[in-house]
Length: 180
Image (tube, rainbow, N blue to C red; front, side, top):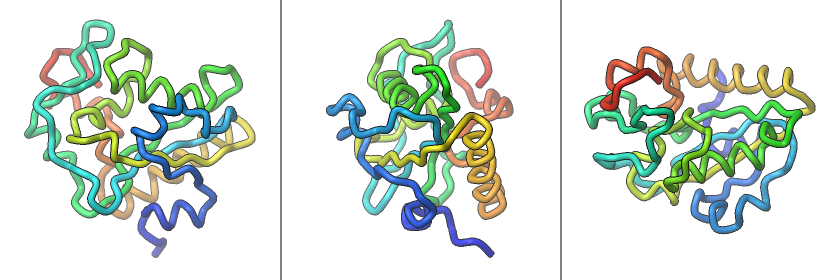
């Protein structure tokens, strides 16, 4: 059996950063490498997990990012630190870690930018206290393999995808019309 996908395990496996969303937003993600890779969002220690009734993220292409409280609660996995896994495949500047994470944070802070995935992070109370970590990869194929491996391990351990890795089936709990 592999170790649970905790912050400690991910750090041993080469992930770095482990900075809060608030820290990264204030620094404009200058600490984040400008390379392809995989990033994760984690709830550690006393990180909050109460749900907001409305997302702090704005509608995107006519779709409201807000999910119902019941839908959010159904997705929540007690005692799982890992909440979201994202990929920055490169090679273009918009597809490197720094820009992907920056877009993710800007979307959660109300800016209309393209980062729909992971959107339920922005319905967690005090999301600025969540941590972001990343691991660089040599190219898009390596990033895709690492993302798939992390997601597969999580699903084997918990029987479901991480809280904020929505699939099309999550559209059933969507309040704003339109799918995930």
